[in-house]
Each structure stands twice: as C-alpha cells, then as structure tokens.
Image (cartoon, rainbow, N blue to C red):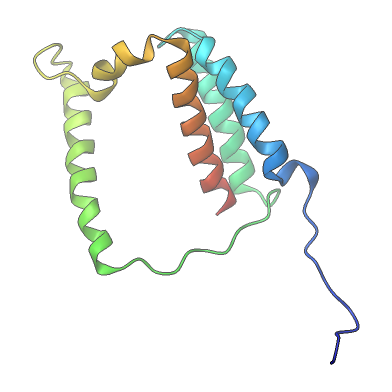
Length: 135
C-alpha cells in the first residue's frame, strides 16, 4: 500500500472558522436587534456592518470558496418573481403610497417590533452577506 510522502492541508485562519464566525455574527445581530427600527443609530450600524463586509468581500482578506456549478435553466424563472417584487417595492417606496400599497418593510414592521425577531432577521442578513463575502 502506497502512502504519499507529504500531505498538504490548506491552512485556515482561526477567525474564518464557523466556531468563531457564528458567535461574532450572533453578537453583531444581538446589537443590531436592540436598535430601534429606522433610527439614525440603526442606519449607521447597518451601513457600518454592511460596509465592513463589503470591504472584506472586495479585498483578498478572506479565502474564497469554490464557485457553485452552473445553475440550470429552471433557475432563470426565479428571476421573474424577484424582479416583479423589486419593481413593486421600489415603485411603492418612491411614490410613498402609504397604506394603500404598503412596502414589504412596512408590512414587516409589526413582526420586527420584537427585539428577538429583529435580532433573528439581523442574523439572517449577516449570515447571507457573509456567504456572499466567501464567494
């Protein structure tokens, strides 16, 4: 039985492991969940965390994961509802239609009044953004 003379393992930094990144994202989301919705402090915190993740993603500070294989032809059909939702959300936001045609964020406000739910939404946003940074 032949054994290779050398084994090479890709070295990962400690802060890139899920054991470190998940608690950091949880702490960031708990802080974000405590901020009142649409306040100046919440907006600055969102811009700060998003900007830091964009900075990490655009630089070569985080090792990239391999890109997924090509999406099938059926995946293109998901673009249509997303585009319709985006156009509807943008038009209702720009026109400020109020209660007649509320935006998704206005509809989600009663759910996001609870700090725990808001923290869970923050965690989902940060985890998705971190996944994009790693690509």
